[in-house]
Image (cartoon, rainbow, N blue to C red):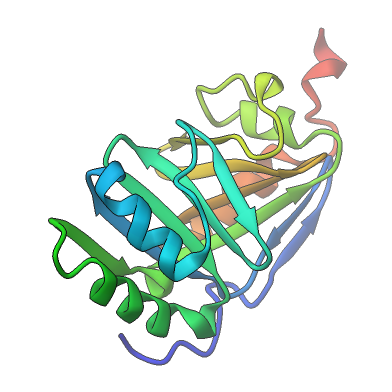
Length: 186
């Protein structure tokens, strides 16, 4: 993978019902395989246990998200992704699994504010009011595939393909426009 120096949108920001911010470069590694077989090697390399279904576990600057019954997403500092990917490949050498450093193919956004769930609900078929910190969902935001998790109280994190970063930022910003609060019309 090439040396990525800039994030997708140079930390663009929009302030409306919530603050929408492109979150800068993040390291991301996808792991595919039998999660039971991945558990030991992943714990050995990252110190993280396999999360429960639709959950994210975190320790320090690493987080591991459940993406499907045979897929995990490891998030870590961008500058650690290549070495961690190599360490995971070595640790999983005897296991039927794939390890892919997808850091430079993704864009990350945060939505901060008490209306974050409401803004995302305009775009996604998910009841975000039922989610708690550490809950993660794969879904679509309008026509874009996305992973979304509750990263803190009143904060949601969205990951999408870097190739649609501008579209996603514009989509999130439009949904967060002042005066577009659904509560105003109920």
